[in-house]
Length: 205
Image 1 (cartoon, rainbow, N blue to C red):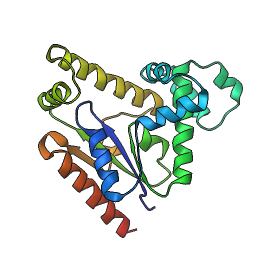
Image 2 (cartoon, rainbow, N blue to C red):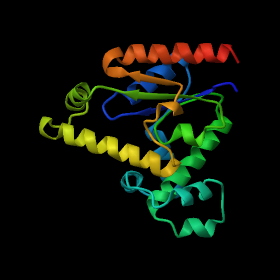
Image 3 (cartoon, rainbow, N blue to C red):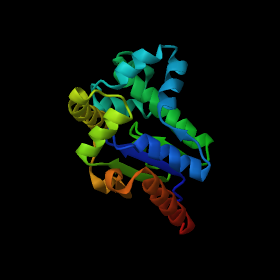
């Protein structure tokens, strides 16, 4: 299957969002990250801030998410907490984008799980803890006293979100075609490797 969509899961402070944008720019395709949450807020008519908080909470049930992602009876969805509903709405938006767009980059949001039947090139970006902390302080404005704790909690939140919604293990390398250490390679080289590999994979299809 042609790998027309690039999905990127990433540790906090690894620069995955930056790398995703670099890749999209070099391939001249869209990059979706926070835009998915903005589309969800517009769709359901709720403030973006309330959805951000809900998105970070642990879903109540992988089974519910699995069933509802398959368009099960809406009465089930009505009884779910907002965190589960957000994931279901985001999944629907992401699948619709896959139908409408020829190719794009998707950062986070269980993209490789949601779009596994759409021809995904699955990437995981990680990094050394010290360098991720340094990025959090210098680039994201996190205070030095709180940076390590914030990094640990952010990683745990992303891992829990992914594992709970997909029933899989976030950092299991078998889920990805490419795993890159951005602390050692740098953002630009990571983007180059992703673009080059993506092009070569597609040329073989």
